[in-house]
Image: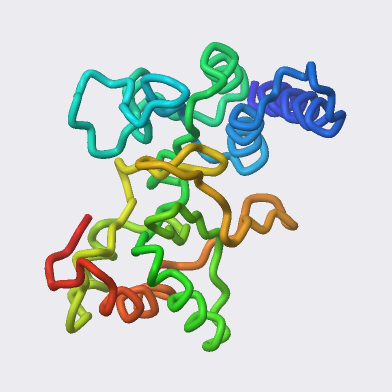
Length: 234
């Protein structure tokens, strides 16, 4: 049974990759659906559609909350627990909602992330590069940058942060039960999500660093950014 399911998944991947490489305008793969399918079938990341905006030119979230602080950029229906890498489900979602943002459900076996203010992002990457530490994929919005890392537990993260003298409150941690907006989704508050460092897929799933390899650089870079402090932000 496992071999049959494996062959079926491989056929789904091959069919989608063939359609993607054909470049046909009638291929049924607009940019957001294309990105969602690539994450699900090639990277094997669990994704789901975000709620989206109330209208194409609106900054108002389509959810019922009139004061939503992340308009369009959060799960609603389906909920976060529905995130999947199943090609059929992902294809159905974006066939019905082609303009939906792409959300990655973080934690478990999926990537986690640590995000910091956009003004501090280049400084953090410069430090990692100078130290010869290889960062993984980096997601950028006009206001924040997020470094994707290997899955971590809250216990391990707590140990790492406890060892720091100071943890800026501007840092945010996307672990088990969290989510992250992926390119090329519209960003909450305007603009667009993009890859500052694209995932390396030369050997299958994108390579991800351990959180302990990047946390020092992110803490240092964020310390002088707006919103600094000692309160932890999970």
